[in-house]
Image (cartoon, rainbow over all chains, first blue to last red; front, side, top):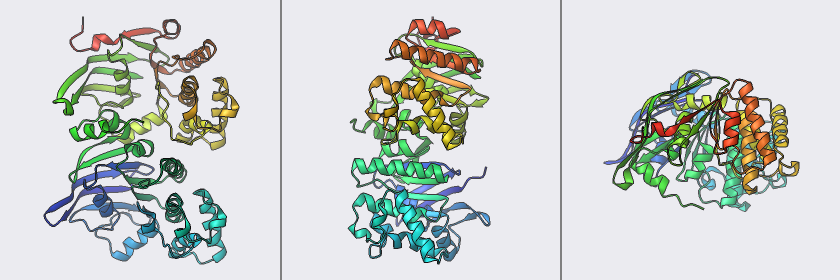
Length: 256
Length: 227
């Protein structure tokens, strides 16, 4: 089996400061990789470099495309990368508003991504939008409402529906449960886990919440000061942390 | 099926002055298919640590941990994930689940993970839950709110749903009433009869004598305590 994504020696600098440096890993189909670290550790920089939102200063992000096999997405042309981010890739932002158009309806938000890949039949688009609203547990009577009238948790679920409607193979998520109530978080985690399994998705999830990675991620990378200090199976890293920073992180979690 | 060769394990506590605590040294054992081995020794001697080493939950400092031919001590994460899906099951003392997921789904999950048809997996899960006397009205609820004994039985139903050729059991009969204890023991016997290699911790001496073919005293592997 070939890796779906190969990240090789990614480095990003902000002037003299290091965003992230020397990050390499392979992600295989259906694997979920978690990236944890405190704010400023470079995890979001890394995610944005992988997803093509930031241009890395060094390194390769090789994606196994359906048509041409493994291709370095860093050196790919802009239109090609855009096409990839509309079809095989998805990006779930921490703030749902960054990933939604708040001035168009919920159904329109989902339909837009379908139209971007060539779907034109209004009935078909609306039908799939309603189907996806159901899958993310939003009542179909809300299809014509604007997301600005939705709660935070609903907006996040709508963002996920918008991203997954085109059947991507790789999803990047930046703190998908950040800023949500714990009850809403649990519902979202359950939803994400189900979708990951049903659709055979691969995902890279950035979070600072260790409970979230324990439930969602198969593998874990721990970042500090732009470097990966430890990586391995999620339960192994959390139960038998090797690096001083990981030990500090794990022992700092409050028990409920 | 499960073979350990000269395994050692220590914990380095960086946040407590870099204290190094050796827990296992020279641990070797061999468990064949259809055999059940009990780990014995006082609390804190390293029984659970040894099980976690076999499951790949703890890293090893040195030695080989072979499960179904794969050296867990050196394997890639995805190889261990595949091993856990197909080959090795671990029934721990604690049930860890995603909130909100119904009990039936929790039990069916290992079957779905090996690509079992959804309906077949749910049917098998229902059969396991019924065997372990979890009332049907609870199946659609999340086990997070269940009593300790019920959670333990859900955990066992989940652990035995898929016929793993290697199994790790951490006190499977703890906190069970005699009737359920009997059910669990018969499940273990059935797994053995089907050729599973089993490593277990049983504080229940009667259960240990009935199920296990031999005992391994883990204190022999404890650094500084070897006789």
